[in-house]
Image (cartoon, rainbow, N blue to C red):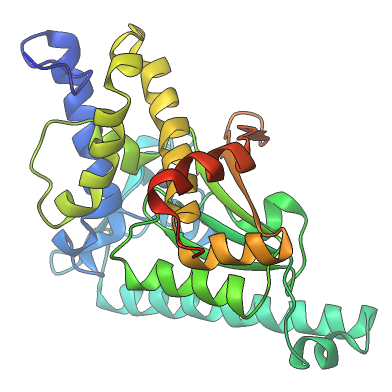
Length: 303
Ligand SMILES: [Zn+2]
């Protein structure tokens, strides 16, 4: 069997891994399978709203939406709670209102600590960085880098891909380079990326197939290196890194980046990987100029 995937059908280990991956993938990428109402199995248990309902102990109602919690800190009788219509309405209202309450507090705090803050924001943006990251909710660009609003231009998608035919990311890069004159472009992947894991799974994932194909292509490009890694988790981590490197290459292939660098000596492209276990960014330390030089043998767009 071709070793594209580390999950080889036939072994019990591979089957349990496959189940786990599919469970994860369907949770992350198939929200439409559940309605927004019945999809209450989906919210993170760590969210305050989820906890609110998780810990409520109302009697089940036959006409209600169901909410299940895996929060082991709760007694088993409270882990499953069925919400009636009114509770669902209340839940949605609260999770909606929470954002506006937070926003109001944030705006008041900013205004208080710096009366000119919003006047400066309104006057325009001159971000130093373009951040291309994964849509994963656990990696907020500004929070993990300590950057303030106005300092980074952000684009996020599943598995931080830079696809040549994706008008969205190509427009972002073009605008950031040609109009905002960003000095650095960062592709930030992360270990434990569900998109990368899904791409390692030999399975038809429907609408996601063409998107994940880009990651499968990264695997194919680095097949020898990846197949030589026997530890499945290490191979997964390495594919995350290689995916970041290939997306850096894709950025360097653009006319905007090549022409700006030839003229201004910026932007410089960086590949980073975020680690959930310690919260730290790893710099893959790509040699930008060497990568640019190699790419321009075939993809030179500066002439
Ligand atoms: Zn991800």
